Image 1 (tube, each protein chain N blue to C red):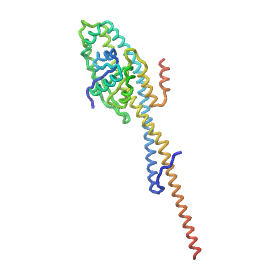
Image 2 (cartoon, rainbow over the protein chains, first blue to last red; image 1 turned 180 degrees about the horizontal axis):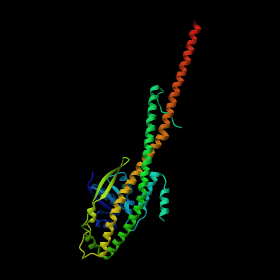
Image 3 (spheres, rainbow over the protein chains, first blue to last red; image 1 turned 90 degrees about the vertical axis):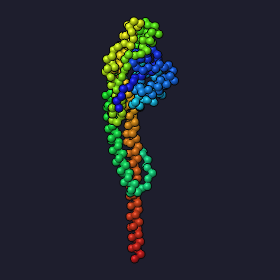
Image 4 (cartoon, each protein chain N blue to C red; image 1 turned 180 degrees about the vertical axis):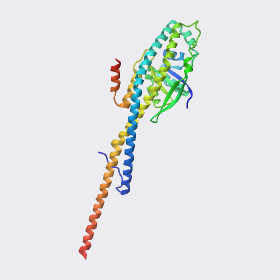
Length: 114
Length: 212
């Protein structure tokens, strides 16, 4: 089922403006309600990938978890204008922990990287 | 110790239990193989995921940096106006891939939408920094999409691995021992009945012999 779809972005105004500039459907959101409403609206409009700033993602973790297992919508946390606060990487680490049962692999990776 | 299932100790139940044990063993082996393969697939992708995430974070930080610069140099009103109608539309194809019956999305960027490098505004009222910022954002887009694909795949695989692991463990540590225990219980009960019958017969035979 291939079809043309849109990309979306949710987060602080400054950050989503940058996404808007490259043609990504952007919804500024500052509060938990706004974030939830924005995700809902984008989903209804057929958006399949939503980039959400880490600060906004922290506001609505339930919403993001709800779509975790839905192949129709990918919600990807990206750093906001203030830079990354580690939320996105923490989610990746949680996945590793879930799948393998230990975080050793990532620790090694970090040591190699530094 | 596994508990015995509540069943009647009959020959029919015994056959059925044996059949269920066989099925459980086969299911266990298959699920274990599935889990191992999924972990392998996950490991292949997760390194990519971490590397991509770091790369994207760095690229976005740079793009946001130039954006902040552009904002500082332009009036908010004219900046908003300039970006009101984006000239390029990021388009992509969404497909489905199947990794061991985990359905994951695949994202393919429409090359045309990336090639369009037009800026959505006239050059008279905007600063040069904005052009650079938009270029930087557009440059980060393919990586962003690859990150989206890989991260979603990893998240879904991780979830499925967890589920499969639970199933494997339930079969290995609960169901299979339970069936084994029940089979032992039924066969012991049947043997006991057999012995009881034999003794009774011998006893009766002796009584008949004594009477004649």
